[in-house]
Length: 335
Image (tube, rainbow, N blue to C red):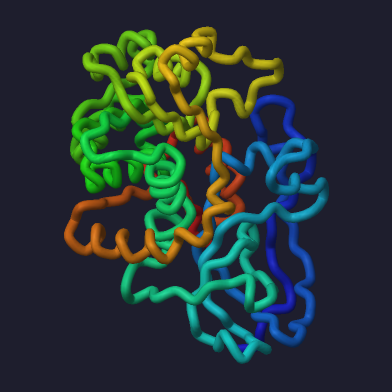
């Protein structure tokens, strides 16, 4: 089979104001560059859409460069190598890399990692064995410095990261794990995954729901949401409580400045630690996590969910739906 000379890809057509819409994306067909020395051609089979990508759609300086108008978006993807000019990666091997949002990708071999698709499903390298899993582990162990016996609360708990936070916290000896989610179906799933308590944040004030779920307070809060969830967590955190600030999806599509938690001054008397983090700064933790995660997966300590959409042309809507909370577990697009 001859290698393809073109690929379909999704480009950023315009920057969104508030919520992204279909008009912000463009499906196009472009020529593939010729393979250079040390490069590989990958046929992508599964790609990831993630909340952090919303920030990259804005033209602002951040920890990762913004997407550029008329250029393809990128993100995690898994695929099969169909051509190679690298001595490190051979044709037929499966790899995970960062050039998603397209059906075929040409990239230097050093920017791809070979995976064992027989040991675990390909898609798991974009979820439990990939960035979401490492994010959950780093946030708990390095940022929040979770200790055995801690009470842990995680927002966005039915998402790719949040669902793993709860399960990993239990595996690390948390005495109680609490999650918030946006539907009764998601709440029920969290309880099936071993959460001790869960609530639908749409049922009433988060502060009241968290107080009922954590009558003795919490020691660790893993924040994926920000806003009223962070405010509620500050009110329930015990002395020397720790917050791992991973995301603030409640604010990603805001068109006006959002207020800080109104009770932030409580952090002083409670001696709280609020610490933000970017998982890319902790790549050195990946081998440790992969080893532990393999064991947890093998014995059933950790389970993971996926919400899958089919077709590159449906990737923009999958991303929009992700921001609206339509996913349980990891949102993926099968190409």
